[in-house]
Length: 324
Image (cartoon, rainbow, N blue to C red; front, side, top):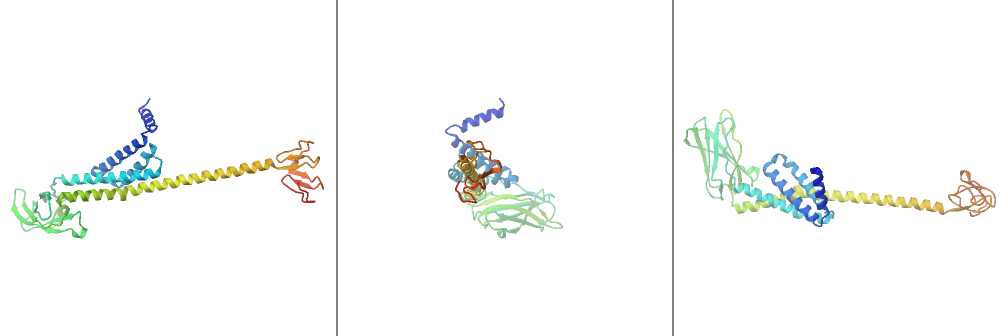
């Protein structure tokens, strides 16, 4: 037997066990949490597909293992997306709390060794920003850009840096401050001269109490989990419920039509009429009289009282009014 066949047999055995639903929920939890953390932390280029993938897996894995009741599935979804949100928030906090500052340089190497120290402070603590200008002088227009991830775009400050000293690489420019707003920052350096030159952005510093960073990370992870993933999950539940309901209605309509058709056939079989030749009672579906053998062609009969031509479906004579 092939590997796929072995897996199918194993899955069949699991689905038939008493613990199948619990296995499905545990597997859905493991797969969705792992996928969310992997994409968010290492595969940011496909993050736009993450909510769709997680919603589909969160629905179909438990369903495959027998969780068909949509109310129970909805309750499971609440727990699942809460765990996903808290896990994501915890992972983001760990990344922030343990990051190391990465030095930045411009593509043309006009600016090199851009950094900040220390990497983690609390509001009011001093921060030291520095970058080396490799070509220029002590009066060049070197500046620092800071982007506060907790603030509004309009709050992003631009600071002019001052010449500090010369080094083997060039002129060292610095900026010292202890008055930054609370938040998590990204920094970048630039210089204006004959041409604008800027470094890439780098993460840092963290200018906030780490306990607050943790609570904010857990909150933002949970909010992201529910507004981007859980919404799609519950839409999927509603869509499948509506489709099943529509299928049920169509099936009930087809059954009703079949019952109506059977009733009409039965009523036709129960109908009886009188043979115009011998006066015997004849079943409605008969093609000839069982008593005298007279053939009923083209559904035409004769009234036993006035001999007027009748149809098999007639209940009384159109000429004399005799009931048949």
